[in-house]
Image (cartoon, rainbow, N blue to C red):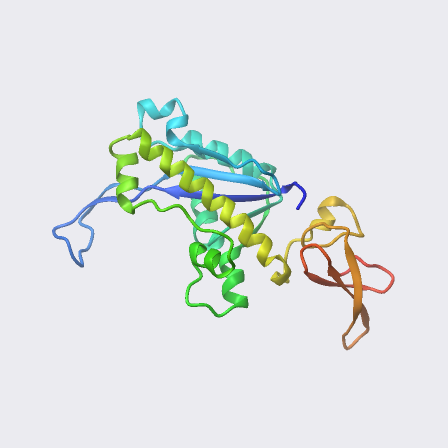
Length: 251
């Protein structure tokens, strides 16, 4: 798939909530000592080989306050401001809301509007699987897997101990999630029926609305109560769309 800088594949890693409790099991939080924040952000443009990742130690503010994510959040803002579509797994419920929450906490105005795609919601709406986690979907579709972190100890070593090796593993884990996510997104493309119209971004009326490819072919007709529509299938991503017989771009 050719590079499309309008579509950004991304993933964030966040800290835990540091709290005090009176026991170990089934406890209500007695006191929140530190609210969670973003510790790492990875992203890539669709089709690009380069995967970008930044984490808190990459910024000068980290030496003064290891738990201040403002500079990291500003970089996320730049990426979102330039994107037309952002893709994440559990995007609607987690990543997107987390990012916008940190914008608001730091008094950063919202970036330019973009459309969002949630691969978790797409998988849940189209398939019946035992699990819809990214790592399990990767196995089901033979796309690859995630890096094993060993659990919360990795987060503890990064956040509390500032362990360099742990930060290195954290960023590799974050990058691999984005690599796997892009593979999942491409695999799901033919099943996405409400995908933002990439052809409009490219101002190319002859290309596929889902992926922007020009390799589309006529595949019969669809019929509605009011008319007849030309049916098309993309030979690259496999998605289907329809158009008026005189104006191919109408979906």
